[in-house]
Length: 347
Image 1 (spheres, rainbow, N blue to C red):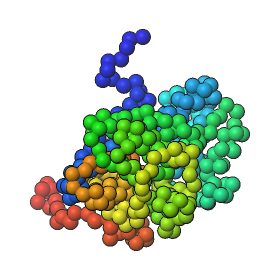
Image 2 (cartoon, rainbow, N blue to C red):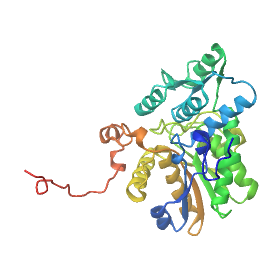
Image 3 (cartoon, one colour):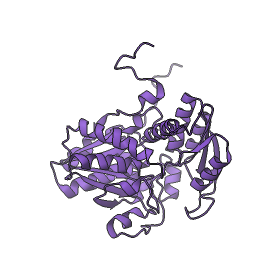
Image 4 (cartoon, rainbow, N blue to C red):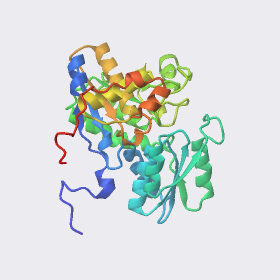
């Protein structure tokens, strides 16, 4: 078999990772710091979760747990499922996804378009036996030749970020960074990146951003799993337990970010940087700007731009939905006089 040239990647799996690091001009100029976003939305499946999906399937294959024609089952808020559906299509596996029923409609549609079998279940606390992750675990156990990918507690998730995302950030900054800040869902990205960066320099601050309704801010600050606020419009981040992935994270501090700030930065990223991104990118950049102001000018801060905004059009980019959530005032757009076509239309 002829070897591929170095600038040609081997299909979907080969295209995962090695994403660019973007300087966020407006936020950098405003704070006097270099605020850099790892463009994970440029992965082939559209999010940072492509890395975990690829790693989890590859690890199961390596252990001999996933054979030809096997089934991959996962409980997910959407993006890991999308990554898994791509990898399963590439490798000939059946993909079965269990999702809570409160996610953006586009995520369900994308998964179904990719050929995944999608099951929606009521949104309930993790303690409930019918919580979506627990349903996925039981479903996988009931299917012959199936694995439960278990992204929250499968440390293949963390290991891929330790092996790839962290080293990429270190190389792209030439080792010149002062802080890494990001929100956590499964904990895989934060855990792997923080471990690698700390292995290179203990001075790099690793700060966790946390939305309303999550218990991680209180855990990091005070050692107690206690929710801050009552719930968030963000999807796939914030949690009330310490996962196996997060348990291995190197966390120096935590920042609490209200939804209004998250939405404001989602729209700033669009209006000022030209980046159409989801809510997790908004909370991450909001936290990066907060940290930049805390550290003062001259520092370099890296965060994660997790996924694109297309899957959130019905909510995050829907004025009526934002008004229902009392968040419309944070979603500012540039005001321009509308054009009329009367003078250019041919009668």
